[in-house]
Length: 214
Image 1: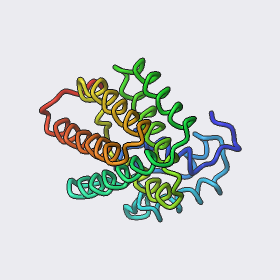
Image 2: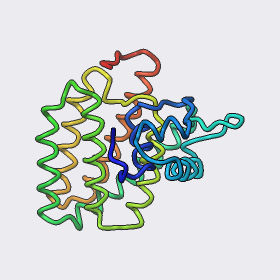
Image 3: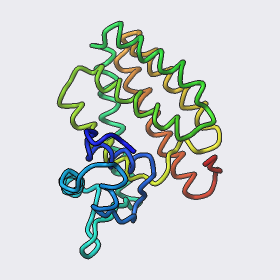
Image 4: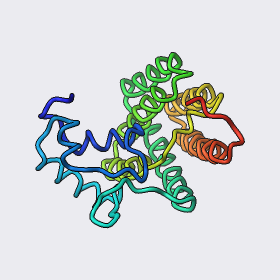
């Protein structure tokens, strides 16, 4: 059980992000309070916040985890690709040597996670967040935070597709190399292509064209 001082909003969001609560699942205040070891008041406030952000929706009197239809997923990936590409190009201009070193270290460490989609998905989120921070643009970071919260509504990770882990790591390596070289256009294009390939992989997973390792 998580300690009481842990933020209820973050706990519920992480559970959605990690697939512990899936689209359509009903979230009950009392159950969540017991699960996370917090009182019902912060749980209630967290649920209201998540509903305001459209991560939860009403089903009668109940709150359930929202779901995204095909068009909504496509729209989300379009926005994500553009904003992530911008973040990479700004990181190529403004990232400090220390920030680049952290990104490089992440790529090398994440190679050991290939074959474990859940751990890779968590590491992937850390990697992208680090690029957002390296852009040194607080407004872009805020907008990308909104996009990534919506990404939590995806029922599966594209990293579950057979062979995707190795390819994703190679793409991350290319992105970091471009940032390290200060090549803004190259970094932009590499990250945008990375997001596009992830979406294609997700569509192939959903169609059954490729197998899931989960």
